[in-house]
Length: 295
Image (cartoon, rainbow, N blue to C red; front, side, top):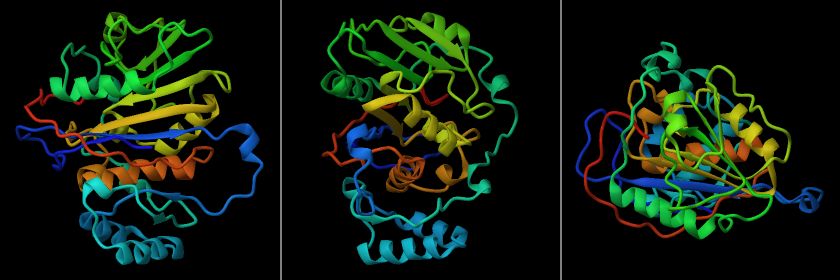
C-alpha cells in the first residue's frame, strides 16, 4: 500500500514553501503464498507525462514499448491516482545511465560531516510519524526487529517507541550515534556495497526516509531487502518532492512526483518477493523545510 502526502512539486535545487512526502509501502510475500500460481502483478501507479517522454527515449525492448502503450491508454494521472493498474514490461526498463548523478564523487566525502538538522518540515514529519504509529508493531513487542536504512540522527519514529532491536544503517557514524531510537548501527555505503550484512528473514519492518532517490543500485538493494525481511514483513520507502540535486539519480531529477512513485514501485516489482503496494488518500502538507539535504 502507499500513503502519499501530496502538494505536488518537482525536485529542484531551489525549494518553494510547501513539501510533499510520499510513501511506497509493500509487504514481503508470505511463504505459504509464494508457491501459488499468480496472474501477472499489477502495481497501482500513475504515469506522469514527463516520465512518458523519458521512457520513450530509454525504452529499447519490446517490454518497455508495451509499457508505454499501456500508459498511454491510461492517460496522464494526477499524483493522487498514482499506483493504479500499470502493466509492467518483462524486464527492468531502466538503463545504467538513469542511475548516474551530476556529482559522481565518493558519497563518503559528501556525508563526511554530520548534519544535525531535519530536511522535511514539521507537519511532514508529524504525518510520517503518525503513519508509523499506525502500521508499526506495538512498542516493546517481543521478537520484533526494525531496520532504518539510510538512517541519520533521527528516524521520525513515534515518541518513546522501542523494540529489542532497531538497527540504523547510514553513512555518518556521528549522526547514527546520536539517534536515540537505535539499539545498534552499521556504517555502510549502499552505492558501493548494496549487500546488507544481515541474515535472511531478520526484520519485521524496513524504513527508508527520503533517501531512495540516492540509490544507484536500487534493484540490488531491494532484492536484499526482500531477503532480510521476514515473510509478511513491511518495507516503507518515503520520498519527497525535495532532494539534494547533485546526488540524486538522473531519472529522479528529470521526472516528477507521479513518476517517482512509478520508479520506486518498479524497484519493488522487479526485485521480486513483494506484494504490490496500494494507494491511500493524500494528506496536504505545507511550510518550508531546510533545503540543504533530504533527511
